[in-house]
Length: 581
Image (cartoon, rainbow, N blue to C red):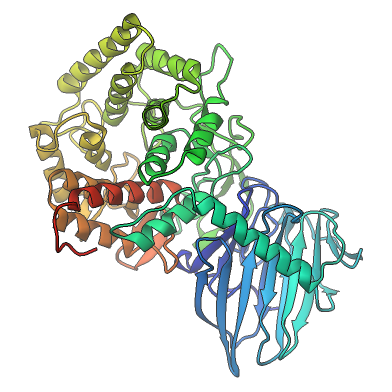
């Protein structure tokens, strides 16, 4: 069998059931799939090793991608392929709703010619050999998964093969448990039920205004990466897609970061959510409180069990674009990340204000008290650098979080304690966290700036035209900008040593909204959108030299940032007739 042909990140799409996802390439192959849950071991990992990673692919050398689209606002994907003699399509979904098996369903339209299909499993990140045997009307894979099809299945050389005959509609189902061999009517019923489930989920938010299609696509990305059983939203669906091609900045993002809580809750609340998703996300975060004396109140990121994510280990795969190591788990779990705690306060403030609640108040209060006691500590910052420092963005967001939460304090003494810390933090920033040019430094004593400072006016820390912000923006434009894209500052890399940082680019657009320069805002947003794909998915970064997308995919932090910026853009446009939408 020919090996799976690796595609670029831009060619990827995602289907899911709010437990896990499968990545579908534009050629109809499935090169990444972790059955059961986002962070479980993969069954297909050709995305990270096209020789041994395993995939579900077609064996038609003449097949060419011919477009794809989701049905309605669902995660049901239709991929069209052009063959030498005509077209056919694949409809992919993961069933949701009552009486649906946990599975991947694939419905194949009648092809104009015979199409070979091969399913080559590579369990446990290709560390386990595939054990295939005929069982219960299908093929059992390692005693854990079962493949069923309308066509005859053959086992050969560690793979399962079947053929789609010309002129006949066919289907296949890869299930997490044995089921009665399904009929065409079963497959249709699961499709109809899944579309109904997605209609209900999508109805919780209705956005109209500028960039309407792109906002809808970003909302789909957030929904796809939500673990429905607990409300946790993972940072991305993948691990080890490189920030620097051929380099070692390859990390596992299949966990829930505290720092994402504020950005994601803000995006959902301000886009008009009726409440379930952001409130369940707060439930998840606050439910992970650690009752251990020598540990911070909350870890910086969590597994979907509401436990600290596992420590980092390495997998012997060749890596996407030969970028190694391939990592699972994450080695930053013991870091103090003050911005993560503060982001939980921002999320709580938004939810309390929108829904007039005080849910999880005891945990939120403890987070505020923890920050009062620890704001002065060096931490590892928003970018999880390898050395702890007095990062300016960490101080600023703690100040904002405490100030906002004081509005909800139960008693005056409590509010005064939090506001007293705010005064000390603001004084520290003013005295220690400015560059020689008067800009906000990336950390105390540095003469560099970071794109995270673009958020300071959005958080309400300072005015957009404060002298410190004007100096910061000047430095960003001079040293960290190319063609309306912006880079972050990393101590461990030279300037422009990685791709343009898309969330940071969008934060700068949001800054210019506050300055009421909507032309510049739109130019920056459109520059960022050049690095979303045809289905509206963002990865973490972009390489403007090659036009490629970089980093793990899809990236919820970027999607949430985009939604927030567009909401602000729409608000700023109100009362300005004739503006393009």
